[in-house]
Image (tube, rainbow, N blue to C red; front, side, top):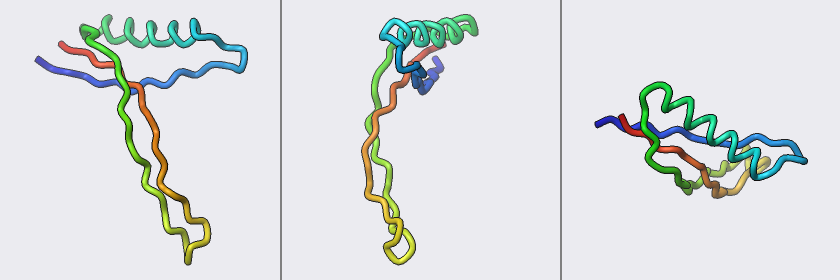
Length: 75
């Protein structure tokens, strides 16, 4: 069995709604299932983005955290 993990990021306008996001998720799922993949689940992956020291401390950036939504498929 093969698995495929697809990152997902919704793109909506300031007047967008949860329904718009759901439609984008549905479109992504339909695209993968039309290629023979079966949708399994979705979930979040929490990760840390490393900061940088900058040049002599100028422009230094601290580490930050982010969460990435992924859709999991199997074949």
